[in-house]
Length: 545
Image (cartoon, rainbow, N blue to C red; front, top):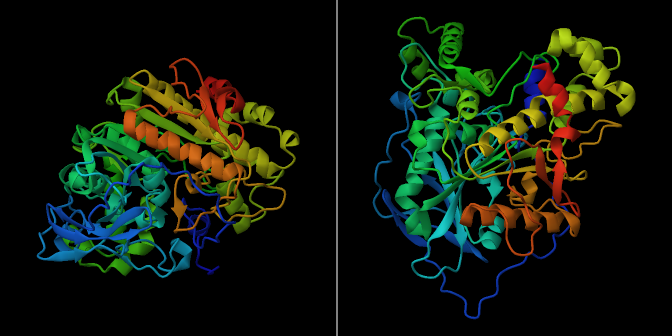
């Protein structure tokens, strides 16, 4: 660790929605495929888009089209400008190699599931995965994936969608969007301040409307799904007038509109934070950064003239910095959800049983003295003020065996699980909502955090290997984990097809009700309804507000 590395930067490196190096797990059990009396013809590898032709590749049961630009390069005068249309190209563009990751801290193994992949400001690309064999005139559901990474890291191409496309008979589009300072920067008078990343994501949906049919997809059946920052973006999109008609269904994983982290709960010295900020804050923070970088005259031109390397070190300052009070996002997404100002489309929404554990483990790995029995009262006081005593009584260290597990449990309950359940109840007042909690106690440790006497459990992002092969690797053990993955893919795909995750052979998943906290638990050998509100002491937390 460099002597100049800050705690937040260290934790960001440790705890990402995707991780640095993926070690292949045991060979996965064979996945189920539909047997046809006569296989449909192989779908073409050359596809004509509205911007030109692309040629992809076929690998077994799927086709892949990688690195397709969906907007013009956001460089030069287009840095901190809304995404612009792609210039049409001549001939057939190669689509067999993914584009670079959007500019972010780190360019090697520490920031990518595919070590050595470059980063660049010119990064507005997407990737399309389809079944290889499709009948002529096919119109399959389209699932658009927005990756997580704290709004500061990650890439769509790190999520291999082969299993989802093949088993689910769907088309999957994974998207790269501007991150950190490039995606959420603002200035007084700058149109789009704080919204450039969201604008990119919505532009990817417009691209789907124009081009889905070329791949055999149905532009009238589009499901947006995302995890962590991607889920928070999906929730924000529901509150955006620009998204009207672009989203037919949504899956929000570990990313409710209601998330709220009191001081010290993301990291012991972190400020209070939410995923969304007023646009005035985005502009003020951008102006402050400009001043620190010496841009005090003709500020926007000066900032656009700076090299990428001068800006990347500041990208973490714009984590959880998606702005509202703008044309693109008029209202705080939490308020929009509470007041019903979101479309009444079907939604799957949920999170993981032990969300906070990798964040707590990362803090301890950075400084083992930061979360102990001695510091526990101070942590509670900073986060909860006059309610600290009540929280300490509800979460005594003696119940959990050590301060780290006590702190991780209460942070999970207070800042992840209960806010998610409140959001789910609000969604259920608008339309069909299917709530879940991922709860595999032995899920893959995708965050690569290890602390003695502190199991990771169903940690933040540990559900991802059940839907995707991260970095092209299957991380699941044969047997129960693989069976759960097949079930989850089945739920997600059935939902994309019909708006209802229920399908033949799967345990019934009842829709959520506005007045209950019952969710569908997803764990090996234990799939079915549980009272997540009781498990996470939500009556206690709701009573503190």
